Image 1 (tube, rainbow, N blue to C red):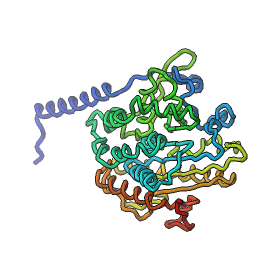
Image 2 (image 1 turned 60 degrees about the horizontal axis):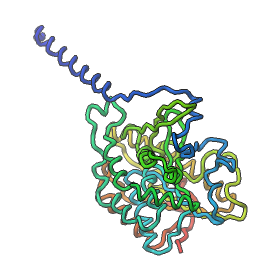
Image 3 (image 1 turned 120 degrees about the vertical axis):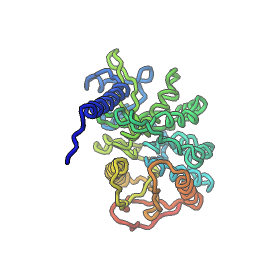
Image 4 (image 1 turned 90 degrees about the horizontal axis):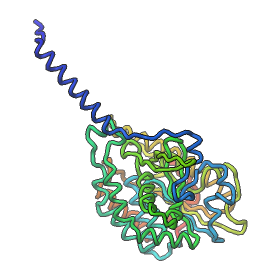
Length: 402
């Protein structure tokens, strides 16, 4: 015999469902960020208040002109370029590799440094040189990142990110301070350049931030903007909340939404407008040396994905980033080799064990930092082509760093 719930029980269930729904709606309304609408025309004209030269767009045709080009401002006859990719916890590889390269005594001073996502967190320290290697070790190999993923709870389901952004912002603020900004400004005035990549979600465009220009601007908000750009570049969509960065167009202010640079450009060697235009980048007598540090493996990495939301989102994001990285690397390589540039690529070996956890596991990051350090200390084996995207094992001989 089927037992029917009485009226009281039905009422109680309905009330409970209503309360859950009401709480969810309340959380959603609390978590929603109110934004000021702005037009596409305003977005195109928008600049950073007080620092109009703070950023350029990777797809802007004007970037190919002498006036706007990222690299036309670099005076060196033999520029040395360092491009650092994203990779989350795998950023420990690039941090360790740089420290080991310093220990070997052959690490050059980089004329131009670029970074996206985890690479953006490494980039300012790489730019300033070996004196900051211990800071890189502290950030990537001592557990400072271990508590980055702090759940937002139910609010995360209805807000802008599953995990709190404050731990990431606090990590950046601990190490990026006024003296560091002053040091970057001095190097910028001497002609060296530091760039960080973010993705503007509103416009679906890659923003290239001139971090040296920000540092040297003298604007009261320069330090906050510098930190915000680094935070935005490392903010994986859905995991961390996007950064809203204030801009101004025609005297009217609004805020753009920026996230992880790896969404559109996981490694920046040259802006896409330069790759498409074929415009000469450096003087004819220059022969740049380009070093690309991939904080990941190059070859596709097989994995039976667990049937859980976070694992599926993580794997999908990794797959998308790997695809755009492959395209960027191949286009940049072809551009560089056609101009007789010295192209060098380092990455995590395809047989290196993966982390079993989502997040920033201390033991894994320490081991990966040490692995990168030993690679750098012993003499980095640079690939001259990104061939491993097509083959499971390297097919070209590698050249040891002298």
